[in-house]
Length: 162
Image 1 (cartoon, helix red, strand yellow):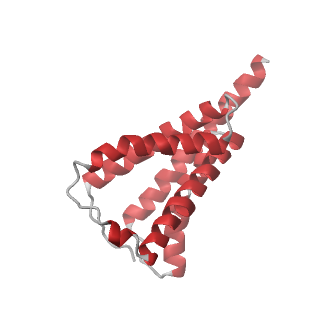
Image 2: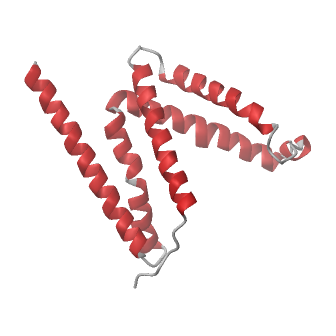
């Protein structure tokens, strides 16, 4: 039985904006890799510039940084894991995949993640499948099919020109 979900326009806008930013990032990293730079070097530099642009904005945020909390072993371990494991290693892996496979093929895998998540949630966790989940899966699969068709057509056109 399907259940009804709420629509949140701000959340939808932020999700679309995140996808757009990720597409720009992936395309730029592919272009940068074509100059022959190493993946680790470009990822490190992208992180550095990201931090440099984010740090000044922390002064405008309504929170106080308490270093005594950061130095607690559990919090320090969590930050190190998030910084190195969940961020640095993942970004290096992503950038390497983009360098080897290209932006479109690599993005195919990341855009399938929500489909796998919904299927796993229904199958393993016995969650209810909503109409929005079904519509989302259909839209994702249609979008991936269209992007693969377009990239296939571009490949055939390039081979004909040679």
